[in-house]
Amino acid sequence: MSWKSPFRKKKKETFVKIQHYAPEITITPVDYMLPDFESEYKKAVGEMARFLSKTEPDIYCDSWYDTRADVMEQTMTAELLSQQKNHLEVIRNIVCKHDAELVSLNETIEKKQEMLKCHRDELDSLIKLYSDKNGGFVL
Image (tube, rainbow, N blue to C red):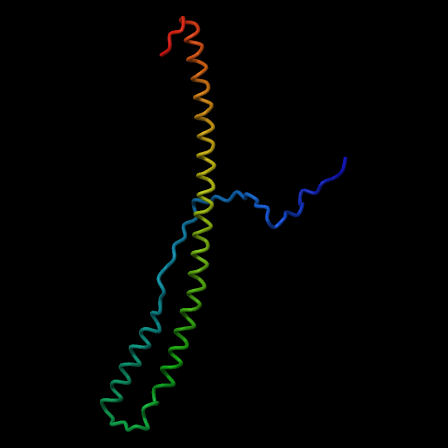
């Protein structure tokens, strides 16, 4: 008798059914948030408005706040990109959860259908037995 490893390698095309069912996991994605940056942006707009109202800038002052705006834009974009990674991971987890629930529900349906078939077969045999005992009378 040859020894077979329980850890045989599967071919890439071979699909393996893995049981995974966890109804207690509740995962929901949240909206993108920029609360700190929104307040910073509003504060910067207010500063710019106050600055422009108290001064009379000429054509050479037009880039005075550009650097600050560029830094804020880069920071906000980086924050949104980091949130996007989190959102995508949450969505993948939701898909995994739903797939697991679908596998579990399909297995339950298969078991119930097998039980129903067994009960129908038993009922048919009892009806036939009743019919045979009562002279061919069928319910």
